[in-house]
Image 1: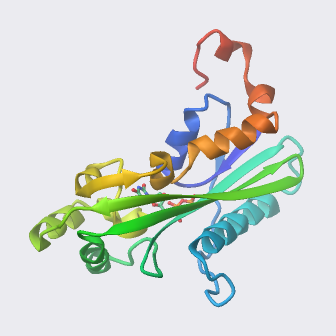
Image 2 (image 1 turned 90 degrees about the vertical axis):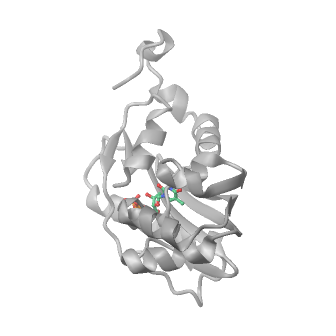
Length: 206
Ligand SMILES: Cc1cn([C@H]2C[C@H](O)[C@@H](COP(=O)(O)OP(=O)(O)OP(=O)(O)O)O2)c(=O)[nH]c1=O
C-alpha cells in the first residue's frame, strides 16, 4: 500500500490526481532544523521531509503491507531568510509586507521510501507578489487563510490574487511537486504496480 505522510489537505488533493489508491498518516514532528548544519533552503526542506518519513516509519514498524511512503515539506525563501507558517496573525501580516512587490522562492523537499530504498529531491519555483496595500493585507489575514501555510499565503485559494508572476512548477508552490514525483514513481515502477484495471477503464479510484 502507498502511504502519503501528511496532514495537508492540499498535498492530499494534489496526490489524488495520480489516481492511485493511498492512505494518509500524519507525521507529527518538530519542524525545526539546526540552520548551522542545514545552510541552504533545499537542505532544510529535504531534512524536514526526511524527519517526517522517519516518523512514519517508526509508527508503522510492524506494517508489512506498506511498500511506499511519501512525505514533503514546503518553505518560502527570500533574501537568505526562511518563512515557514506564521506564528499568528500579526506575524502573517509582517511576512506579507516583506513579500509585497518582490520575487521570492518556494522550496519543497520530498522524501519517498520504495521497498526499503529511500529517495529525496526538491523543487523550486519563483513567485512575484504585486505591491500590496496594508489594508489589503489586513483583510487577507482576517480570512484566516494564511495561518497554516508557508509564507502566509495560499496560491491555490484567495492568495492567488496576490501573485503577479510565477516561474516554474505551480504544484510545488501548493506543496507537492507533481511532475518530479510522478517521474520518480513512474521510473521506479510504482505507478504501474498500483494502476488498476479500473484506471485503464477510465474510472477514478476513490
Ligand atoms: C506557499 C504555499 C504553501 N502552502 C502550504 C503547503 C503546506 O501545507 C504548508 C507548508 O507547511 P508544511 O510544514 O510543509 O506542511 P504541513 O504542516 O501543512 O503538512 P504535513 O507536515 O503534515 O505534510 O503551506 C499552500 O497551501 N499554498 C501556498 O501557496
